[in-house]
Amino acid sequence: MDANSHFPTRLPGPAISSIVGNSEEPLPSLSDLHDCEPKLEFDDTELLTPAPLEKDVMVGDFVLADDPELEAEETVNPLEDDFEDQLREQSENFQATKNKCDFLGTDKQGRHIFGIYASRFPEKSQLEGFVRQVIKEIEPFVENDYILVYFHQGLKEDNKPSAQFLWNSYKELDRNFRKNLKTLYVVHPTWFIRVIWNFFSPFISDKFRKKLVYISSLDELRQALGLNKLKLPDTICDFDDKQNPSRSRVPQAANPNGRPTMQFGVPLKFIVMHSPCLNSIPPIVRKCVDSLSITGVIDTEGIFRRSGNHAEIMALKERVNRGEDVDLSNVNVHVIAGLLKSFLRDLTEPLLTFELYDDVTKFLDWPKEERSRNVTQLIREKLPEENYELFKYIVDFLVRVVDCADLNKMTSSNLAIVFGPNFLWSGRNSTSLEEIAPINAFVDFVLQNHKAIYLIDVNQRTVSVD
Image: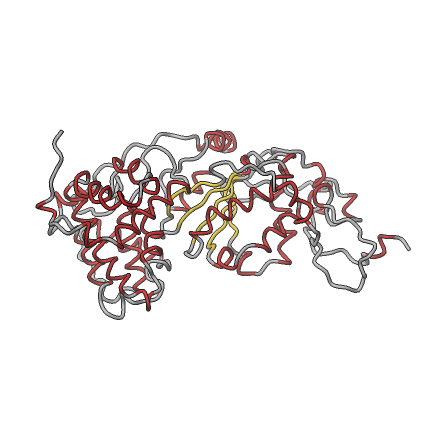
């Protein structure tokens, strides 16, 4: 019997032969803002040859080889193979390198953003170890909502993963990875990406399928994430300039302080100078904390973890910046929580200041017996007075949130993961995952030891004199 007879019908897959073949129509655009396909960084001729598709679903790395033991009537997953045994031996020799993925910040709803770069993929034999390392790096953060950005630029023939590998990697993901992933942005996608996604679509849930968003330019990505600045490798920025010459990079001037009524997107010192700030606490921060401290609100499950309605948050920010007196009494708890996180994230300098960044990121290197002294010294002696007061005020509130952890499920470590990147970020480079861990550990330590740290009133703190 002919081996091909085991496949009486073609399996679900992208109908690319009728589109790519000899059609005179142009390829569909991947974005309303992008009408031409980026040049492939590898040989994609196997995807553009229609003849073999009559026999196989895909060719090259994506051939589903005939299996003489397969029973025709049995419904099987077409991507099943023993890829773990195939790659296990090689993955044992995989040498871990730093920065498998980057922490890009938090989006406009306060969700962590992680970047994965095709240009950093190792050769095929080491991909399994690479994927496991990426999973290990971001695993502590996926209990909360998060965003994943995949930069396709730089994918080569020698590091292009097979369909079987991608499918099995997807299946091995823990439920939290799939459930809490809110959006998967694919930047600079090619025809190859669309083919692969269409191939997997029949086997992926509708809910997960809707999370994919194609992004054709870095400007589009910044707008989607709500970030004015993205610190990315030069190779990606250069590639974007070539693909989008009309959107070439122009250095952005620093935002002016703006109207005296502004409380979002301006320096903390500016707010203290122009707004009625009791003890250096901006009015909108005090409103948020007062609203969230009410019994029945502070114990809301997932407070600060769940995302609030972005449109409502933006509308409130605009009203506050116009100088309106906003009433939060009937506003959803997650919107108020998002408003507070947005305030911290929009400061022109992080609340813990750029000056403390290098010290805080060394937190885990300090001997445990020295951490209390070092943390107290940093906070009391190196923070400007308005930063000290506001940080203390927010910490006191978060400690009360932790006291309700049996109901709201937000422990000090959970809150540290949420607030760490909003309290501190780098002013020079993008913050790596290796630096996020000590920042979060620092915040967690402050929440657990706040009484000792703030034992003496701020007005009595000693200031070192050089």
